[in-house]
Image 1: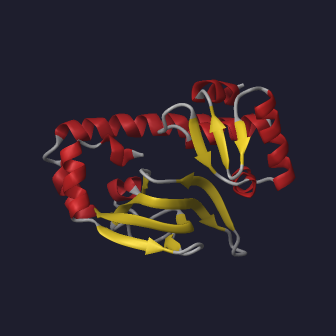
Image 2 (image 1 turned 30 degrees about the vertical axis):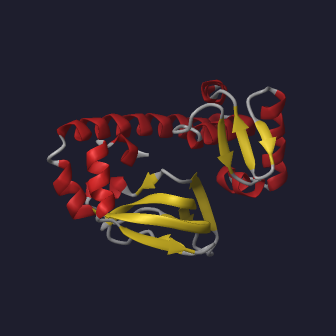
Length: 211
C-alpha cells in the first residue's frame, strides 16, 4: 500500500528500526479506538482488516498480504484507529513507529509527494468500490473487491483468499459468493483455484465492476 510509495532509502531506514511482531491465526493485531502509535507492514502471512460487530462477529473489509501496509492514515490524522485487524493464519509484521516515520519523512520531500499521489489513488479506488457495493450486482461487487486486492500485483495476479472470506467481504452467504465467482469465471475475468483466485487482466475486472 502506501509504504511501497516511499523512497527506497527511507524504507530501509524505517525497517532498520521497526519492531517485528508475530501473530497466530485469529490473534488480534490492532483494535479500533487504540492510539495510532505507528503503522503495520506485513512481511509474511495475511491480515484481515475490518470491525468487530457488537455481537462479537468480525466483519472483514479487506484481506492484505506480504508487502501491504495499513494504519498510515490514522498516523497522519493523529487520531485513534478506526479498524480492527486480525491475523489470518500465522503472520509476521513490522510496526513502523509514528514519530520516527513523520520525522524522517520531512527529509524526503519526494516521498511526501509520492504519498499524496498514492493516497489520492487509494481514495479513488475506495470510492469506486463503495459505489459498486451500493448499486452493483453481486458479481460486480465481488469484481470490485478482487480488483482492489490485486491492485499492487503484476499481471496475471493471484489473490490468496477462500470462498468463505469472499463471502464475509461481500456480506453474503458462501453459496451466493460462489455463484458470483462462477459468473466472473464464465466471463473470463477470473480463474478459480484452491484457496486462490487468478486475475488475468485487472483493468477488465475493474471495468466490469463499474458496470
